[in-house]
Length: 201
Length: 185
Image (cartoon, rainbow over all chains, first blue to last red; front, side, top):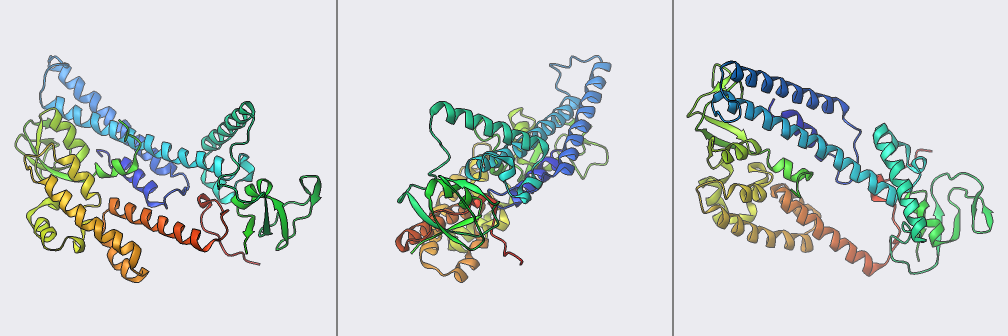
């Protein structure tokens, strides 16, 4: 009661590592909404009681008024916790779109498991918005996240990548642990996803 | 309200404060010492700060200083500020004190916060740049959340600088994906 569930929800979010998602805690989320409903019921019963006593609800400041006020404030507090929970998760999802890739299927499966259907929808719509903006501006905005030094870099393949990806003008076969000399812009998305690593020196 | 969605702000406002009720309230089970589900006028209850703040604005309660700002803490801070375990008293010591300051009659909170912060911040920065990880791990559990954020920011800038000096792979796996797990073949 009185904002406890909302607090637990926010604490659950804060207990994860900063910038990392935990699976969506729908159980706590629903419990918080239930608590809001309880508060709402109690407010209505207290207001009805005041009306039955024939008091002016707006201006009379008796004990029932303060009781209803406390329930109202708890409801607003739970609402704030729910909104903050969703907002902060969605911020991380937006970050994912910029840093890792614009396609939902490019995300590793453990991240996809942690998102709800609504968050996946948001991701898709956000990617579409980014792509249309990049099209209008005429530039690719999600490359060169690190200021470039060389146009080409040496990479080693770490994870299995699908066969036959077309890069430049030839199809290369990316076997594991093989080393390649690629254009930086081509290799960047794979490095961000952890499928390749940069070799220096 | 720029901090509406801010998680740290929400957690700061959850801290409990003792309040004194000026008006009675019906139908609420906040007061654990009351037999019925209402709060008597003149009752002393511990409420979370967000509730106490709103009720104070409507002049239904008056707020007293919570335990983390009492005389014992003040004396400890005066004696040796960097070794006081502020995290166990109150995880958001400074933010909470800043919010409390306009609402309580005590005028010395501001000075207390700024002196404690100045001394501890200096210690924090020295530890980041000089101490090995082992000594730092004894010091870190004493820091509040705000100080821990500063510590980590300084640590990040230190590692970035060292990396720049040595030179190394600049493209990184996106940190959002978590740590790399060892592949099982």
